[in-house]
Each structure stands twice: as C-alpha cells, then as structure tokens.
Amino acid sequence: MTERRDPAALPPRRSWAEVRWRQFRRAPRPVVRAVTVSLSAAVILAIAYLIYDIAYDDALSRGAILPGGDLRTLAITVYIVLVLGIGSVVTYLVVPQPTGSGTVVRRSGWSAALGFFAAVPIAYLVMVVAVQIIRPFFG
Image (cartoon, rainbow, N blue to C red; front, top):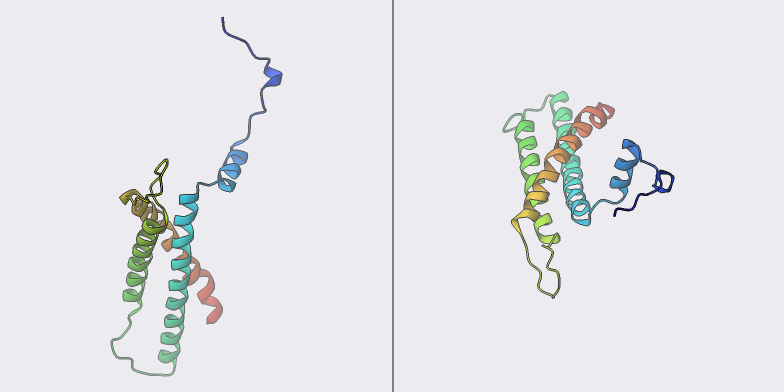
C-alpha cells in the first residue's frame, strides 16, 4: 500500500530563476576552482595584451617604425593558448580525483578537461570585455 501525501505539505515549486540562483550559489568546488584559475589567468594576460595594444598604438601615432610590424594577432593567439593551457594544467593540479578514503591524492585527465572547458568561454569573454569595453577608454 502506498502512502499519499497531502499536496499542501509539499514544498513550493521553485521558478527557473530560483533554481539557477541556487545552483550558482552552491556550485561544486572543482568547478569553482577551474573557473577561478581560468579567470585569473585570463585577466592577467588580458591586462598584458591591453598594455601592448596601447603602447603599439601610441608608437604608431608618434610615427615610430616598429620592428616585426603589427603583432597583435600573434599576441591574441598566444593569449588564447596560454589561458587554455594554464587553465588545464593548474586545474589538473588543484582538482584531485575523489578517493573515498585514504590519503593518496590521485589526478585524472578529467580535471584537465574540466579546466580546458572552463577556460574556453572565459578566455573569449575576458578578451571581448578588454578589447570592446575597456580599450576605448584609453583612446
């Protein structure tokens, strides 16, 4: 015989936004670590790119001839490779595989994959913010 619950005793259904907000506030630790690593690497490298971009434009406005020409495309390529690489490697190092019990720390390629897939959108979004929003303030 199954027990029937009173519909009034059930908790109220949460809206889509409430569910997503709860998931955002209680994100799993490995995901938070992967995003933090990728975001910090992307921000630091984007600042370095902005410094180069501003210095390059300043040199061009003064009429200087720079050896190597315009290396901004190369700089963005290096930025993307470094953010993806740092995100993967550092996440691999800081997100151990669950072991259940014991003191042995095991690493897994899945941790590196988590870091890589966290770094892809972060690298793009940070560079968009840097180039499209922050860069115009510097002329």
